[in-house]
Length: 412
Image (tube, rainbow, N blue to C red; front, side):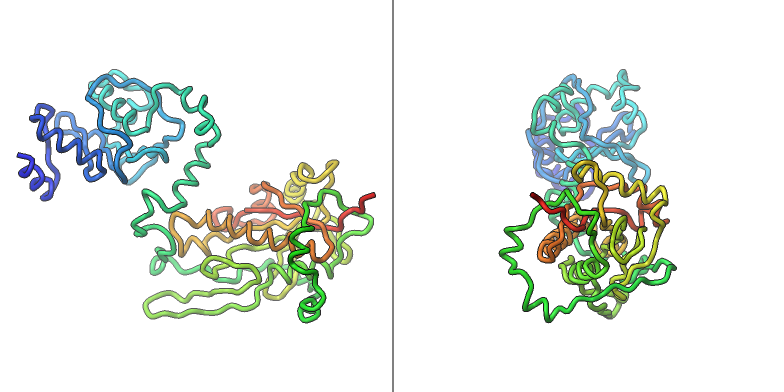
């Protein structure tokens, strides 16, 4: 009998009545628990919901019985075509909702539905529900994770959903559907403020040794406004860390032209989606304001005046990072032209962007230290203020990091 059932399953969906003999139900339970089978629950020939596994179940399927619980705080319900999908990063399967009565039962508005008890039993088994809401707040391992951070971690790394590589990594999924995002962004119309360029040959002979820089690097939170950073120093810092050395064009038959820049810091796929926006409050030789760093021309282009309310909102959070409520001499806003990397990568691009922010931030830290400047990274920024100051659509370009730099105040 089991052999016949396997052949039937191999040919397509099989309907199994609740009164099916134990050999059939036991086989189906084992297949579902191993992650080899999708189960759809029906009532009166109407599909209610499906358990769609992406790995083996965490525990054997329990005996059918009354199920009561509450939805896990990590479970989300999203639309997928005409269905809704309940997902949970700690679960072994998705619950695909085909009938709106199921969504109502999950929300508690259809608790009396004849399938509600079976539904909640399945939600508890799959981890989409918990018996007691306190279990997720009383245990540090779950209480310490906010839902969005756990989701971000699980969905941007290789694992249960990413091992096939079909829709994960550098798939170039947009090739042929959307034009690639150019390497050079649309420039702001203000006249360029040229920055001095350092003599790299001289620096290679006189620069501070890397080991000394690594050991002496600190986060600086006090700055000397009486002797601020100069245009030459800011130009050297940006030149050494963030300039575009060249842009190569790669052409392969049947694919879109790809522009790959080269900069001093590494970037996945040589895509380089990051842009630098110096917000200058006090710098010798550069008027105050918010600028965009033109990394090809090694120049600054004014984006907004210093007194622009959005610029003030960008600067304000830095006072929480610096000592005694100071404001930065220069705050480098790191922004991502997300389409540059999202055109190529699936599932993981924003995680890669944040890794690039870390790489560039460390480059800024070490270079500033070698130059005798002070710097400190800021773990947050006002993304809405960045959009208001630049006029950029946040889905196109967004603030992903900040780094404060300036002349450190002498210590007694």
